[in-house]
Image 1 (tube, helix red, strand yellow):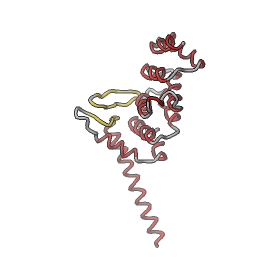
Image 2 (image 1 turned 180 degrees about the horizontal axis):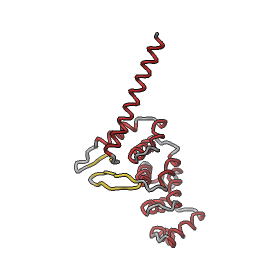
Image 3 (image 1 turned 120 degrees about the vertical axis):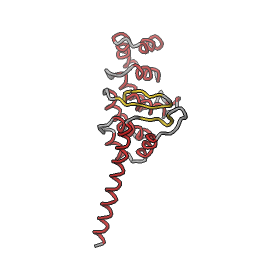
Image 4 (image 1 turned 180 degrees about the vertical axis):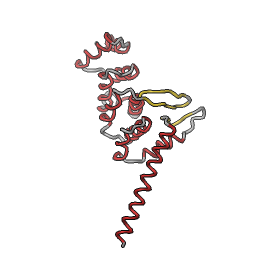
Length: 195
């Protein structure tokens, strides 16, 4: 009988936690915007950012499946939470974003805009690293390499990737392609400065 009670209570607790998680994700989807830590004229912390904080309390085993969720805001916020936890599999998750056209509505300070998830995730990681460590950071180096070699990377990420470090000769042909075939001004400036 005690075993039956224990199993029953465990089932109720598991259902309750699952329902709370579903409710949190549903609330994030309902707002469907990625809010930064301060929003609006007064720089308030929004309810959506508080939801992100609650999502961040989950462990990687719960967050990783959410990086493949059908809703882009959930995908973005779950990846942010993994970045904040220094998750070492970030590059694999970022690879799903870099070639995709998926975007999210962002709200930071007084500005609402649309941005590719790859940009929003990239800058979350970029800003988590001290400036003097960026050039040699192995995760950022891989993310920059993906940005340079992806056919659909926007000019903001190409600029940032080229600004982060001096690349070895093995990157020369790709940077030339960006400069002369794609007409990327940042690649042209990079070549004039470093080659």
